[in-house]
Length: 118
Image (cartoon, rainbow, N blue to C red; front, side, top):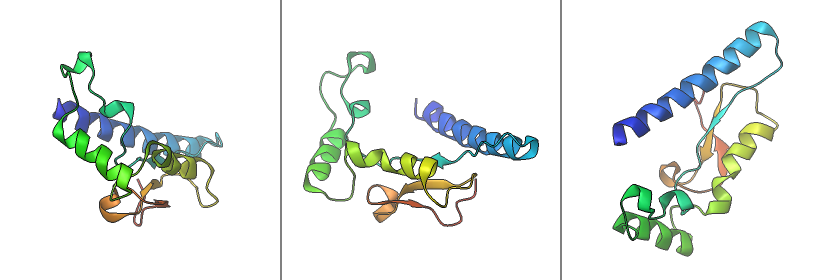
């Protein structure tokens, strides 16, 4: 399952890059950026019957605890901020990568990553 997840992330990045390149070449007026939310305790982490879990795993409990303490990871609300910056930020020009700027890019304020050209 991890391999499929990783491949899907690569595919999304390639799609964002190609969309921006094709738009620029054809004059569509569309810019495409990529963002990641960092780590945050959302329902995507929840134990769900379809995932074969009855309760949260140890790593999920740790992420929830760190988020409550404001340490290292973000919150569900802050997870949306990199996407908002990528879509509406004054420096958003296409083929850029945005995410949290905190330790390990796991949480913190949203920012455009250096050398972030897709």
